[in-house]
Image (cartoon, rainbow, N blue to C red):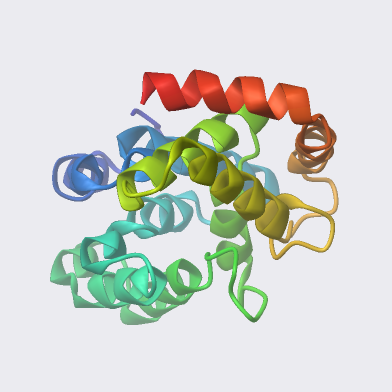
Length: 209
């Protein structure tokens, strides 16, 4: 990934030391995911006029805490960022604390809104809503973490998760009123009401995984 707004030495460090960590995570949180979050974060930071390098680093670190499991990964990501002495080559302690707070705040199920504009940026970027990608990753996550489930149980788990997170009244929040995610979320919700379509998509991704 190349972006002229990011100092080359910082970009090299992130691309060589941080992004490769995602290669060992579950299929829904590998390198393609973090690269998507980085790109979306940079675009939003540019549009909002805030520091692109900070958005870049937050996005790169936001899920590294998965190395210690999913439940508290956002907190672990924040701790790992604060413990990374290399970041002091490019950022102040205050910057790093703000970035760590943003990484900690990114989780969709967080009980509170992100504390800063950077937290809202990475949270929104992490929620990039492409309906088929979300369905595919939900199926992949289930197969990775619940291999004991039957085919039908995997389907039921997929639908339950989608409703709890993306359905009306679900726990996912969008943090910008003009977010392009809003229209895509509506499309996903429409798809979720079409049982035949959801079954076809499930079968496609189940068989490919």
